[in-house]
Image 1 (cartoon, rainbow over the protein chains, first blue to last red):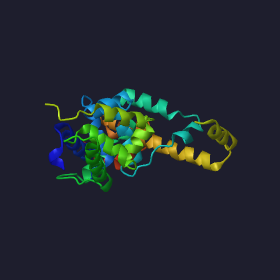
Image 2 (cartoon, chains in turn orange, cyan; image 1 turned 120 degrees about the vertical axis):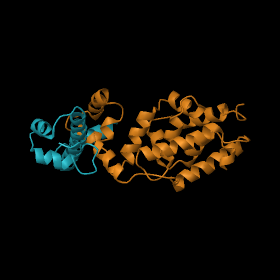
Image 3 (cartoon, rainbow over the protein chains, first blue to last red; image 1 turned 60 degrees about the horizontal axis):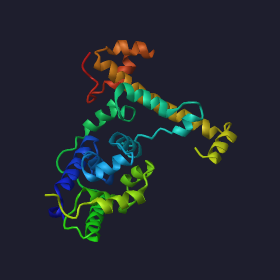
Image 4 (cartoon, rainbow over the protein chains, first blue to last red; image 1 turned 90 degrees about the vertical axis):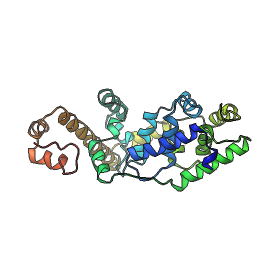
Length: 191
Length: 77
């Protein structure tokens, strides 16, 4: 299957592995594939996601909050009940320390250093499923290759993994995104 | 937040669950902010003593929490 991958798709998988490694995760999940697509804003999938308002920093923050390394997500609603606007706190912190600062910490970085992720990182069952669905999407569209656009369709079709939760959580109009992908994915690998 | 949720929140503000969840989240927020600020101070070469002074805790407490042997915040001192 990988032999049918375009350069963009191969790059997305490479970035996915890099993201997983950087976040200290010992596996490549659908969320890492999504981050890999967002790492290429000039490619079709990355560009469409950006147009729909999903930035990599936001996606990564959500991924860390939902999966992190076992550390709990902060309950924004609970904080609101005592007058603390978590969004405002986060904005201030990020203005000083950079995107995602509140959701990554030196200690978590330290803990990750305790178990370095080296060598080949395996795909999760869901990530493999999304890749199969990317192939099916390419077949459905009668395209002779699998590109980053098909990878995104595969993530959307898989529907149950963290990538989809990130996309759904960002209030993206998935129906419109699918239609745009169907219409805009090139019929063949660009020369 | 939807109107229904807002009403539920308002109606239950003596509900210990709401209050306790707020405390829990606030504690989580404090932990993250503390780590961020301690890291920031260390990157600017503050000593553990200086950091402890600002936090109102002992040097030993800060050192124990943040200067574990495999922790990147540890830079001797």
